[in-house]
Amino acid sequence: VLPQLFLLFDLRKEYRGIAITGTDAEEYYDSRIREAYDGNWRLASPDLYEYKKAPYVQPPLLEIGEGILAKVFGLTAAQMITFGKFLFPCLLYLVLYYLTLSFSKNKIFSLTLPFVIVVGSNVIFHPRDFLYITTFHWDRLRSMIDYTRPINPQLSSLFFFSWLFIFYEWLKSKKKSLYIASAAFLGLMFYTYLYSWTLAFGIVGIFSILSLFNNKIKEDFPFSKLLWMIIFAFIIGIPYWMNFYSLASNPLYSEVQKRYGFFSSHGFLWSTTLA
Image (tube, rainbow, N blue to C red; front, side, top):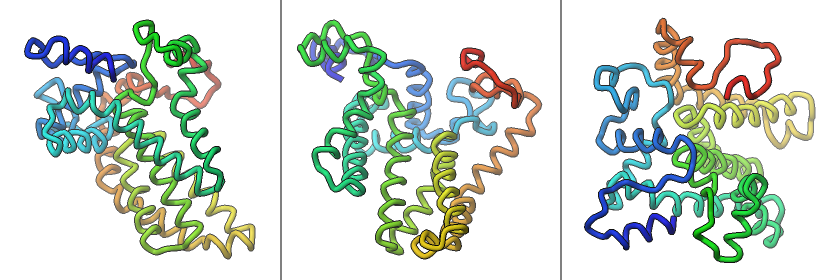
């Protein structure tokens, strides 16, 4: 975030609101956040007026949340995006810390693992950047931390790990409030990111299957409660599935799928085919 702050202080009144981007597809998410900030919460088409009432392809909840936060903090959309690059990775670190501490009970490990998760990919793919940070050569940095990228993974990962922490705490304590919160988060995840909710439902599904075949797990995690959690989540997700039905009925849906990285095949494909 520092380069953007330096730019603001250097230009002062001459600054025209154009933020420094350091991650891929950032302009795409920036336009969606600005659209939500302006009150157009459907986000079907941030750029074209004619399609603003069409079914949305990518769920809008996270962009709406960031737009509302900008209003609450008295910031413009551009300022909130810049502020979010600092705020949301910090919140993610805290959530990961408490999640790790919850199952490990080791503070040193709990402090270390979140740091590895947040900066790990940058260390692997841009090792020199890590060296520049530790030696304070800020001017040589070539990329930002991946988790500063707006919405995905910045907020989608924060939402997912928050659910995972609540779900794990419910598994340990069996508190009704945590059960309700876990079911609500699971349902709202439909409106965040495809890979977040599919992974979350996969986790709940595994526990559900294990509870059918393992008596000890069945006593700790009753199948009926896990099933009702899934049902409640799907009830919350009814508007999402109604939108999806309208979208899938559109004759252009197959072309839209390709542009969002989906390929209609069950065959083996090298990942570069979808790049």
